[in-house]
Image (cartoon, rainbow, N blue to C red):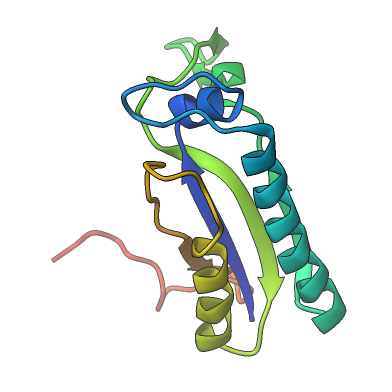
Length: 145
């Protein structure tokens, strides 16, 4: 079964990783960053060796976000606008192919244990199963009560 594991963050966290602290997140040192990268790379290596890794990426900071919507005439409306300083956003993900929800939960617990500076916000690792079967009438939620 395939699962998407997502890690969350905020613009303040990305700023802190560049050495700019805020009330929301303490400044990270170069050693803090290297420790985090080494830890995450070890997880990636283990998942690759076990054959469970499909893909995994970190995302650039939210300040580089682009929003695309449609106006009333159906034309694209493009807005380059950063998220707020404390709004949680997707910071990175792993797409894994695991035997069970229990196995991906073990991996997520390992991700959650990543060493970070004291005072860094604690975000959950979010697990979502990929719908490989596709939509069906039995699984669609129509919102009807």
